[in-house]
Image (cartoon, rainbow, N blue to C red):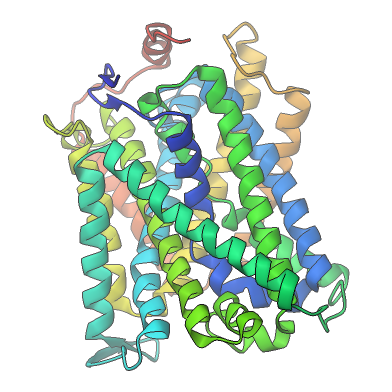
Amino acid sequence: MSNTTQSGLEKSLGRKEMLILAFGAMIGWGWIVLAGDWIQEGGPLGAIAAFLAGGVVVGIVAIIYSELASSMPLVGGEHVYSLRALGPIGSFVCTWSIIFGYVTVAAFEAVALPSAMAFIVPGFDAIPLWSVAGEPVYATWILVGVLGTLCVTYLNYIGIRVAAQFQIIMTVVIAFAGVVLIAGAFTNGQPSPDASFGAGTAGIFAVILMTPFMFVGFDVIPQSAEEADVPARTLGLLILLSVGMAALFYIAVIWGSSRALSGSALVDSSLPAAEAMAVLYDSRTIGQLMALAGVAGILTSWNAFIIGGSRALFALSESGMLPESLSTVHPQHNTPSNAILLVGGLSALAPFFGEQMLTWVVNAGGLGIVVAWFLVAVSFLVLRYREPEMDRPYEVPGGSVVGVVALVLTGIFVTLYLPGGQSALVWPYEWLIVIGWSALGLVLYALSGDTPVETTDEVVRRIESLDRE
């Protein structure tokens, strides 16, 4: 039976809901559009090897989250861990960074939805309004993007259980499409004409660089941990399981697509996975069904990141670091209603900038995600050193050694986004997004006024007051 937490949120998510929230967040839209790039860069086996390696890298970060989430199952995830380890300033930087990542993913989906509709519906691109970076912005794109945002935001507004049930339905659609793709690859596919390992080590490494951001979403579990009606240790295990399931899904898509077309042919299609399905079954209709599964992927990712972003905003507000209105809990729906509306409102702006916004928000948001991951690794090591006796229902094997590995790996990924790095952000568009988000954080922090900022001791007392199984 559901109940209400100390924060006023509804404690109603079971194991299945938590697992599918994270899994659905990770298998969004990217695999539909990027499968060809992975195969062309790394070759079929090379791309699979890259995702195995990437899964291990993200798994190392996820295992750290697993220990922290089981130890501190409170709303906000990263915010709680970093506040206990690093204090208010470190916590604000960490949490504002992960919120940036979540909001940019939600904004990405608000543009990806009309992009998918353009593939499915002939003549969808209609009524050009203006251009951004040389790309036209269509009224139809804005209409579909904004309507989609309103629908997903409303689902989250009226209750976490409704949003979780929606996530389950959409994830089943994606999983079914994946099974159909694999069946077609077995029965109708041919060995790939591409070299098994593509361009060799360089190609495999190029795919590895993409993988951490295909796995973003497992951290929705710690964000919504306070709403989970499961034992604390189980939270940690669910995080690891969700990463493993996402890795298997991506590997299956790569293998199935490679048995339909070469990497170069897949890249020429706007939706490579859908094109592969059409070839395997010799049917454009079947290919369009795969595109519909991609739409389901957009919706699962969108839904999960509005959940994650709103809970992180709620936690910052509850700790006195953002205006108090963002920690308002709806009296009927038991959701952080104002925080949900803010995330939804920000993502609704993206369609007004057209298709080019897809690239900008992914790259800019990626920096926020890896900065947050880096600070979580720092928090893990600080707490292992400073609080060795802390209650840890799930304890990472290898302890500090794993933490150091995670710190090094996430630190490397941070440098890739900086000037001179292989994924360096582009001036002015991407850096302006980063600067704008940082400025918004400073303004909202200032608007929090004289609200007392929660201390580490207060966090510890909240954790100790939990009725943990």
